[in-house]
Length: 330
Image 1: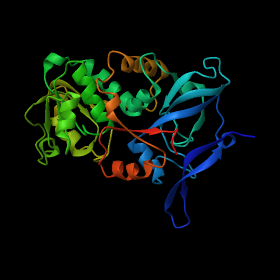
Image 2: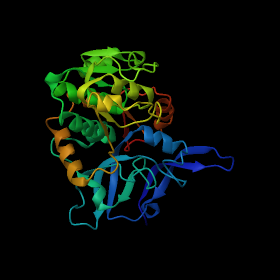
Image 3: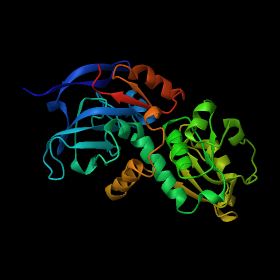
Image 4: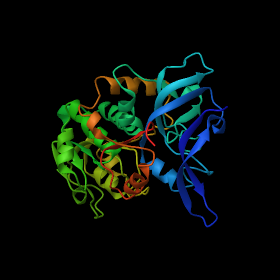
């Protein structure tokens, strides 16, 4: 008899609405793949909330189980790199988008998606990091290519969210002076290592000046829209700005002047398709030198059933830090 497990299943209804239920499935329901993993931990990301709400730009076909992050134990493998009992993690690629994801107690995926859990990380810790930690670390890697701690302030936008809070913590550990932009949670961000916290309004200039007074040596932007445009217009000569999100807006209204008069570099961050060699290297950093000092406390734990309220919260911009999902709970 096939192994039974619990999963969140999102279904499209006849009236165009979507429902989310926790139900039993079997491993025979899972897609083809080389590695079967018993999922112990997952996490909630903005993309998961979109998939769980019926966003066809993220997930094309329903019924579907979201969850772009998963960590657990290999149950079966048809690839020599992995054996039953190995501790592993999977983030991004197509997991949780159009492939049944980490909001189920089992996943089956291609071996090329699977990362062996690095020494220095526990499975739960890897999901506190998850795609958010990977994205933050990729952004910091791009920033460090040209900006050192001695060169000035680094702005992190959307700092209370998953990527933002990870970026603040890692940058602080690496000796950077971080200014966190957020509409809330000043004490939380200072506790992560931010030197200062500013309101969103201070980094959201509605004027039409092509250049603003320089303030930032570099920027890690997680929200897009006019906040990103303001950050670029405020970045100093030869500064680096990374971009990984569009929760504010996918539109970017700018002139070329920040780029041709100040030499600002804008770097797009795509964690979904990061090659495995670079991915494994970044996970090693996150397990050691770049591991956030307060990693354990940055993840608030919920069960599968507890995700319901958190999905609404993250869509409304109310998430603080990271939500980790304990797949051992109902």
